[in-house]
Length: 561
Image 1 (cartoon, rainbow, N blue to C red):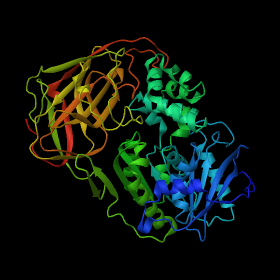
Image 2 (cartoon, rainbow, N blue to C red):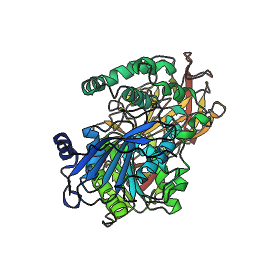
Image 3 (cartoon, rainbow, N blue to C red):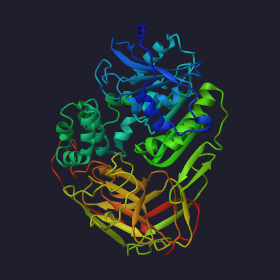
Image 4 (cartoon, helix red, strand yellow):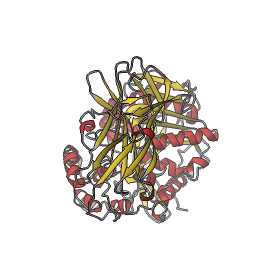
């Protein structure tokens, strides 16, 4: 194991700049959540790794007695704004905070190879932490996205000093996020690679690149082969992108360091999970909750109406107080539980929060059937030969409009009215419902599907059409079809959802051959999707008599026919 390296003794009072950002990001918290102390900052502490590399960290030390230590590990640096959100909020409430920069980022040694060394680096960081004179023997971990993945890496071998974890919008198995239901999630990880490879270029340059990100990335994804789309965009520095998009066998040893499902069986401490209905990692957060709940772990889940980035902005008024309460209860042990139920979920369409004892809650299935006239009804189709057809053209792929993407331009809740009017999209719409319908759980679409080209994808969407005819996405599902099973019955689970369809609105089902560039387009051939430029159409037929939309309904009005 690595040996301790003496800390750099340059502890300084909190600067005016830090005070400003602390006030901006969490200064409005009141009552039991308000700041209780000032803190000092020790910069660039050196943490030795087992392979000889040294990671850098900052220590925020509260003035007075510590309530415990909070460990944060991430690759994005800890400038004053980020440090305020991830560290200052806890230090000013009496916790020691250690913010560690992942290898190869912001002065830490080694090469940044996303997620590959996080298990060992986490263990070595804790070994260093144990030797610090200010460490009181108990710590918690916090953070979102990559900062959440590093927590799952630590939980692959949970140290005895760990008391709890607050994990936000984070996966435990990156491979299954990169290839969500078989297709590579292109725009999310191209955008991330672009951002990370340029994040240390200075503040003004970062602002300029963010302002032009959508245009530059749209140009990059338009070309083929897809394996080259990051080269110019990322100045040839996102070497990992070629591996991600080229290694499609998830049993390839390359993916092993990023597949941390074993942590779900090894964790014993209480876990708070926080996410948004439009977060790119939503499905895995629900997997985490349900798995830990089945094991009897003290686990809580909060789901708000947020995107991946929106949790830190719009969601801060919810997730910040929750995280402080959770740490007070499980790390400081000087606070009581303030959650009434383990699951705290926002009911979209109603603007209400619901507290549930578990997920999913009890429900009953409401089955709706797509009709030959493009309606959606509780009446099954009786004509055995009733069909609806479309053609998917990878040269003009069906575009992404809303959904669980990280791009503000493409993701989140959006008007998808025009999407439903495209010739390569089937839209089935019910008549006005006379009373609200609450759908809480995982919707399912079952399709009897045939295609003249077995190399095909299916994208399905549940939307709500308001009284004025505007349609907005509610929940999506995607599946890359195995060629040998492309013809026949297809079952697609949509994203988990808690949504109220308003009286007077209409339920809509969309069916298409893709959603680009959220997912890579299916090129329609048996050539390598990463390196090929050859395109082929696919003509699809949906057999309506054996196709349906299944909604988990907890409050049922009248669907309208």
